[in-house]
Image (cartoon, rainbow, N blue to C red; front, side):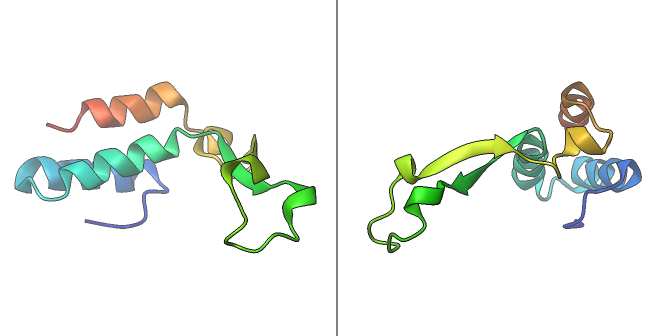
Amino acid sequence: MTNNLSAKKDRFNTIEYVNSTGNGKDILILKLNILKQNTKERFKKESTEKSAEEQASKDFKSVDDPNRETARGFTEAEIGSFIGRIK
């Protein structure tokens, strides 16, 4: 199973592989669900001086991810249809 799911053909081939072998089904579903995320976590400016031990979830903020799949031409519905094809 490929680690790169950037093209539609990669996704179709991987789904076909998973459906025929049964290998990696859970991993593929997880990867496709991650592709639907539109934000990523960034450090708040005032929290950059903290050590790793002092950092907490309140030190991060969600920002739009310019590299998200939906910005590269894949809609959430389309990614959902890929998940629906997995048996």
